[in-house]
Image (cartoon, rainbow, N blue to C red; front, side, top):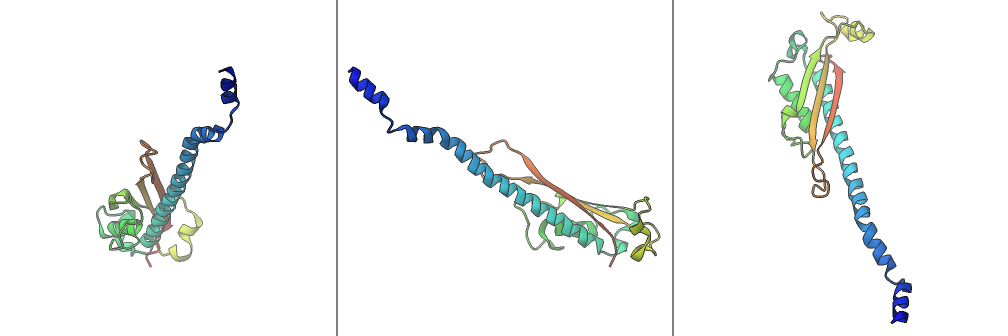
Length: 170
């Protein structure tokens, strides 16, 4: 009996399986976490690209769409800019860039005429403006849905970005 017990204690044939059973949960969390982190950074990039495209689009709209350095709420310029941010198309027919970006209301469009006197505001194409060069700002906050929601339960993240462009009305 004593000899059988010492042989059992000295036997190392199952140690690799036991170590793997202990390490596997941590390894799986690291692998799934890496995939989800990569997907989150992709979502951030897509939102940044969307607001950048929308700011460029709004900068080329006619100045009449932005009376007295403001964006008329619910106006055509605001709606088209929001659609460009969400879908890449002013009509919104292209769908959505990101799965969680379901509404145009997740995007805000503001415009301001700064009083700072920066050189680009009073030179070049802006010399004939009655006020300083208008600057449009497009911002968006989109909820991020994890790839592996059952692994990262309770995790709430948002992909957010903003972009500015000087309005040239071209």
